[in-house]
Image 1: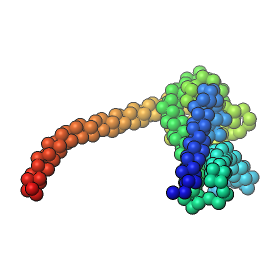
Image 2: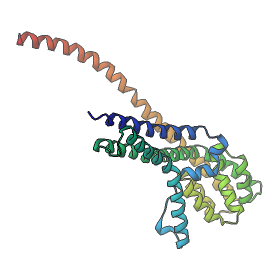
Image 3: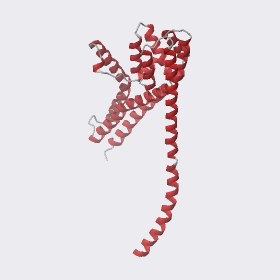
Image 4: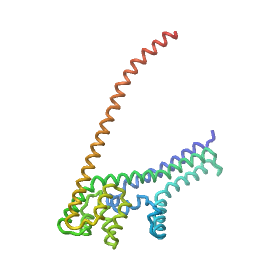
Length: 276
């Protein structure tokens, strides 16, 4: 066996494993404030590019620029580690000619390194969406209280950016910053729905966009909060029912394995008697 092949496999595995380990360690050790900030979520969520949704070429260029920035931030470290692994492989092989098996090992490791940020990003976005769906109802009730007290939507959002739940604070901070910079409410809500892909947030934005001002908006907000709580309760019941069905798996295995053993041993004895 070519001695460069084990060296290639060890080098590629070490490089890819080290890159993934460093990435996971870096994400887990960020401060709590940075994890909930709008900048962290904007960086970690890959921007989507909708060609039909852009009104001008400038918007399309900005979307492509944001996408390339995300690709550079997430892919560059892993690709660099895989490339370094290839050079180390060449040094260990004492030759710049890499065998076919070593090259395939490098491509496999590079594929894993490139795919890891995508999977990690999808899992992170799903976790953020789940947290928003679980806590947004409470913040909607707070907004209803602020609106009933006579505050405007802008003032209510400004208060929620400081007094909301931790899971939704980045959401309201982003919305408050957009409104403070002069962006229209409808446009700010559209940007918010792209950044935070959540069904409960989408329904809440529809209520704010519908123009139910005055006394109707607080009542609509309370109704939406109650509806979201009902949905959360329904999902919890469905999850409990699904988990309760899983208990039959170990019970079935525990019942079948002894029976199979008790049947299999006499069956082997009969086969030996017949064949002997």
